[in-house]
Length: 243
Image (tube, rainbow, N blue to C red; front, side, top):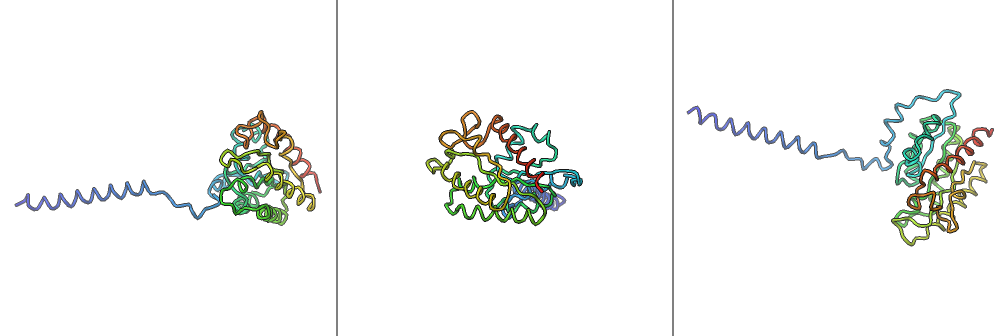
């Protein structure tokens, strides 16, 4: 008789344990859905919270861009170690509208004296076909206007030379980069902004990156970053000294 009562209880307990294990496994498998964070604001959110506010004497400069800037920290970490006031906010693969969305959190909120805006290459290398230079320039203009509104000096970049994107063979990347750079240069001149020329010192005779300065024709190696560091420091000094 006792066994007859115990068996149902054992079955209930077994089912409860099995269900608990199933729920635990399901929770472990399920990941938080970040599709609404298209610009990847979470990437630097935590790091920004730990960054101390700059003192009045600090000359903080934010580097806003994609993989060129993000990889700089790992391939030449001593550069940012030696320049504590340089804040790298590059995220690999990002296009100009994502940089624009991040501008409030990753630039304005950090209260820099200047911001370096490196934008356009991933837009050009995209596969959707909806990108135009005018749309890229609209995003750059918006970032410049936001910077000025918050008394941040914008530094615009002539993009690094690219002869061919490894994932986009035959798209005549060099011509597209040169065309965009001309528009960026003209806008910078019209608005009396510093132009940081990454193109000229890295370009070879085909308007791609010099083989000895790149790992893949798109991203610089450490020697390429050394050249970028020199022209960057010069552009920052010029900008911060300008009244």
